[in-house]
Every structure is written in structure tokens, then in C-alpha cells.
Length: 247
Image (cartoon, rainbow, N blue to C red; front, side, top):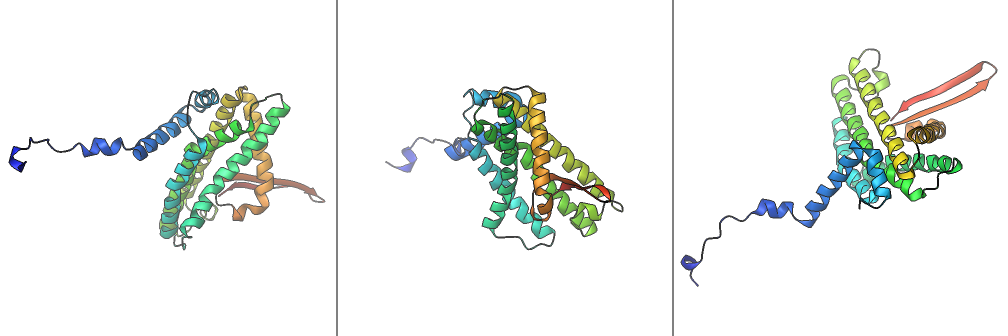
């Protein structure tokens, strides 16, 4: 058959075909799930616990780590640090999720003691949802603010610039607000997945954060994720408190 006799088919709809590819479709579903949890963590978690939302929290965690790892590497380059290898940077990006899962585990134990009987996998799964949504925002904001501080003042330490540089105050306020939002999403998510009241879930999460802060305070210099740390002790001179926001 000659080329002249073929009926013209027009330009292929290659954009629509690409958007409908399995990998792209899965990426869109992942983004939609993260957005749905971030928008309404209690409702999303309750529906997920009932099996109405077929979303795997591990897949969301992997997607968030894959997105934040190159951001960390770029931030290291812009702040004059030698960026770690891709594997090391990937492992570092996983550390916030280990922190959130630890918080969820402690909170779950407290809720169990209070009479809640939901499975641990549900509480930990919600912590991964929180890490992939609000927690990822904390990570990205922390990297961007570090780059802004370094480019403007030659430091990435907020505390080095608190008094002379207002930008550090803005950065601290932003990060603390985002971190508070992450903790709030964890409270609402645990409330939904465990079917407990929000005050009860808040109590469990606050206790978990305090205990984790006490445990992490001596190792704050080795923790590359945003968290709260604190430790109080008493000696012959009285009570002493040390800690605060760490990243």
C-alpha cells in the first residue's frame, strides 16, 4: 500500500497517553493521597482504617524520600557542604520517618493502656502518612531556609543568627509552625485510625514527643531531622533545663 493511499490519522495524542501510563497514574494517585491526608488527616485515616482507601503508607514514604533526597543534595551544594552519596543521602532522608514511627509506637502503647485496641500497624501507618505529607514540607522548608541563611549570612545555624539576623527568626517561626502542623496531623490521624477522641490522641502524642525529646537531647548534633529535644535535671544548684528545637 502506498503512502498516498493511507488515510491520515493526525498527530498522536502522546501527552494523554503519557499521563495515562501506569507509572504516571500511580504517581498521581500518590500525590492525591498525600494531599487528601494533609487536608483532612482524621477523616482520611478513619476511611483508610475501614479499608475504603487503598493506599500503602510505605509507598508514600518511598515517594516522599525520593522527592526530598535530591533537594537535600542540592541544598548541601548551595551551602558549601560536600553532599553525601546518593545512598547515604537516601538513608538520611529516611531518618524523619523513623522518628515519626517511634512517636506513633509510644503513642500507641499509651492508647492501649487507656483502652484503645486498634492494631499497631494502623498507628505506624498514619505516622508514615504524616511524614510523607506535612513531614516532607518540614524537610523541604528546613533545606530552603538553610540555603537562604547561608547565601545571606554565611551560616546554616539558626541560633548563630537569631539576634543580628531577622531572617533566622522567620525561619525558626516557619519551621516550628510546620513542625506543629505535622504533630497536629499525627494527632488527628491517630484519632481517626484508632477511633479515639482528639484530646486523648493529643495526650498520647505529647507524651511521646516529650519522651522522644528526652531520649534524643544528648544526640541532637547527630540528628538531621527537625524535632523537639529537652532534658531537665536537678543538682545542688537547683533545676536545669536544656534543649529546644533541633534540626
